[in-house]
Image (cartoon, rainbow, N blue to C red):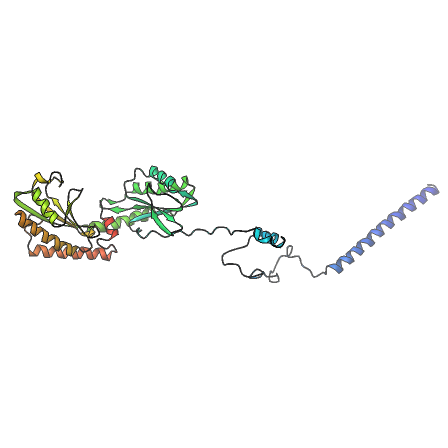
Length: 383
């Protein structure tokens, strides 16, 4: 190796040592500056694990005052406030921000409905549904149902349920179906109940709404069975019969009934009605033919019946006394005898026994919370 090569190797080695030394000096210099800017006792809460007791606590209230209970400010709302605050004077109020709509509270049942007799299902829609469209749709779904079915819509402005039919108008968020479970035909069948609940679900799906609670089949049918059993126990009609040896003339019967304030109605019976139009008792032909205005003049009958429908009358004891008085009056005018269903004459003992029955059954109904003659009783004891 000659002298020139040795010199070059020495120069290169010196340069390398100089570069390494310079880099070390620069590294120490930057570390010293960092130590002065960021003291060594700072902690990174995002990287630390362990006890959170030293972590800074969030204030209970936002700066500037309390928010309403149950509300939160979203990031979007905060950003919007910041942007509004940076607008020039007089510009801030040009931009308004609305709180998200509050969730609607499920309205209670209408007063005229009773969960003991009505199976009620509410339907809630996000967007209002037009009543005519809804009514047409439900008519298709429930065209074959055999039980009374009532529909209601909730009027938000009036804050009350309104009964709807094919003539109703408007748009509503809440609808309510009420299937009557019991009447004089008996209780609702399992098939009708399933048809009803599935039909409501189908309607809800059609209008992209939600049925608020499909009731338990076992619970509803069990309660309906118990109610039907009670209704059968107190479903009593008191009859007073008039029997004549000679046929009684239809024209004479008509005149006597009209004179007492009874009116012949479309069901073929004369009705004695209260001032509020409720039937108190009826006068029927005891034979097969019904009374008809067009044929009364020429008809004949040997038997008449006065009937008091006990569950549907408020004060059955008083109405029985009135019916008994009218029966005695008719018997005298028509030359007939007053007898019971077995053909035995009405004596003091028979009348006292009927009075006792009336008191017993009307007391039972009141104790059950179904007052005789009330709206609930009239619905339960309807055909």
